[in-house]
Image (cartoon, one colour):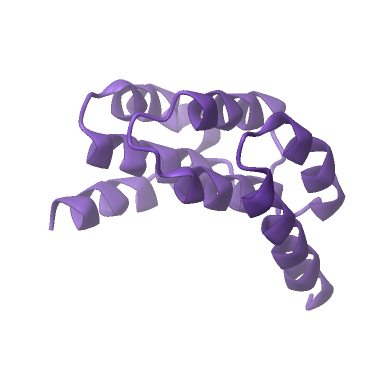
Length: 116
């Protein structure tokens, strides 16, 4: 239930970009891993498809210091942020400790963009 609530808060941030930064910052700095999870998704939904460098940097920093070891969430969030420019995924993948997940993300983004 608590995870659903965190995801619901994240969905309210969809497309808000800079307006959502304060809430995202609060959620990702919280000690509760479920709120951090919601903050990562909030970041992904707020900046979906923008390829915003600040957002990518924030997600990469989070992938290195993730307290809950849930790297799949970070990789999925990177997919939301980078889906409009799938060629950028391969340059980001060398910066992340979860290289295996990003190879799969690269394939997913390529296939997703090919359908449109």
